[in-house]
Image (tube, rainbow, N blue to C red; front, side, top):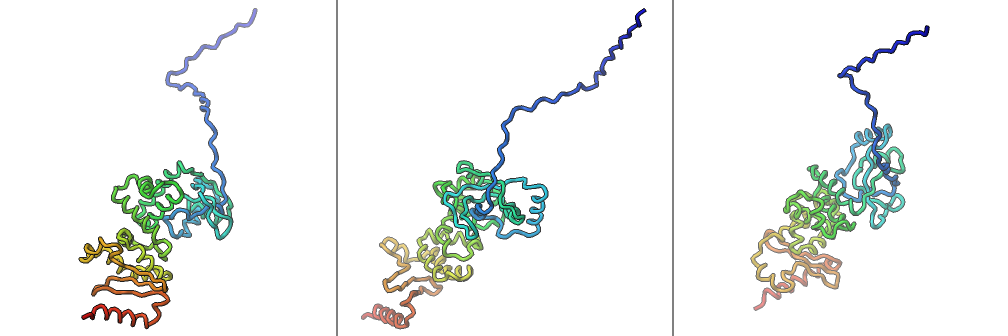
Length: 315
């Protein structure tokens, strides 16, 4: 007699028991491209004004330790310079740094020779610069000089056709008045950068007054005065040009009568003998200032005073 076969009863699965979940295959995605490694020596860290004039040693050491332990989590951002820039410590700079100033210095302190970097093209660079500018605007200590310098360099690099276009693109949420003010800062940088010693120390009020004086036609006088004080500290330079700034905003009663005449009012005179004469406003009147090799002769002043006496003592 064959053995009896028992079929095991089918035990229903409880309704609250979850069904086994089988993982779905991930959708097909293109592999993410790794950012290129760029030599540190090829990056100009100061291609754009930084919001930090100095780096605090302790936070920088902490960042370096983090990079040494876990690696660089966020690549820096750079753009290819239209013209290589001189690097006194090595080969010419080929890239300008947008963001990642501290990361760049931390990697350098670790002895790294390369760093991962996102390369921005001229089409994407304005957006990256606008983000950097927006972050800088949050910082109350960003010098107005650097704000103007950012606009000027953006135009020089061919990212924007004009300073007005740069101001609109980099400060899209700013009021029209604020953009105009930043635009005037760029004009001050363009005119006076070679003449000022530490311009980043200028206050917003000083920058506004300089911009007003430049619009009033005082650029030659201011640059000449700064040339005479080229090695002086900023405070001395400011004191030297302050009378010119005051004059530019003074409502002189004689100005309307002479403004329509060509060459009037006369503010500065250059002579072939190497003599420069310029007038300066003083609280008690006007001062004629003589400079140049010929001005060192006391006989010159005697001749001038004789001529003034002849003119005013007629009859």
